[in-house]
Image (cartoon, rainbow, N blue to C red; front, side, top):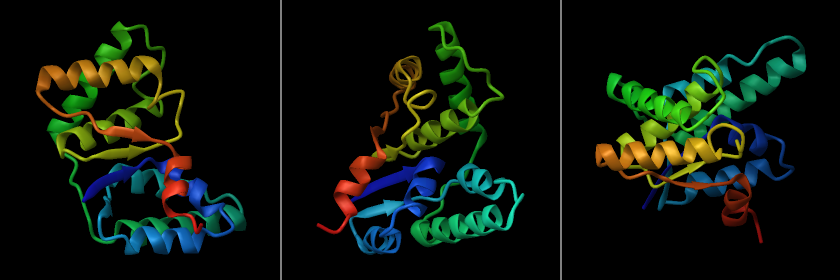
Length: 167
């Protein structure tokens, strides 16, 4: 069984697909593929600005999709996850990483820390600048070796589509 978490951008990408409902259905029905709910991801979706009717509807659609896909598979946040994410960040900065803690990198590092802490198999993301950046990837590997944790594999949105799109 593959235990995975989707970065927030995966849900936004999926919502824009013409066959989004079919892809979502296949994800939910795949018994050997479990997508986990992590509170910070849901919070990011919930914090999408409700400026127009379209943005309000998109926010609601994303939250509904998120809840259906994660379907009761819940991972709790903890101080250990936060401390692990901060270790990633400190090492990332030592490697020359330029993003600050108060940027999106905070949530990205928390998602990876959650995946490492709970021993998840895959983190899906299309965030090349922060989560999947060269210095960030080096930081995950270095810290997880020191902490005796397994770093999840990282796959992109295109990989998810290949697996679940109707052939």
